[in-house]
Image: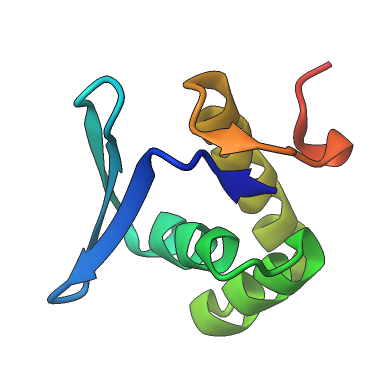
Length: 91
């Protein structure tokens, strides 16, 4: 999974923003979403991202997996991602 080529993820002063260069829309992310977005940007796998969220946010692995899947689905729904893993897609 990866961001489209015309999507930018920027972090500054512990604030992360996603910018869709195609539409001009942008999203301010909370700390959990920031971890997930940075993992996607760094090419990490879904299990790696979930493990990092679990560790950093001190939540159960199941909670982290649910949070990751929900946020990735939201990113996919607004068209920001390519190659979205099947386990995160809505049924």
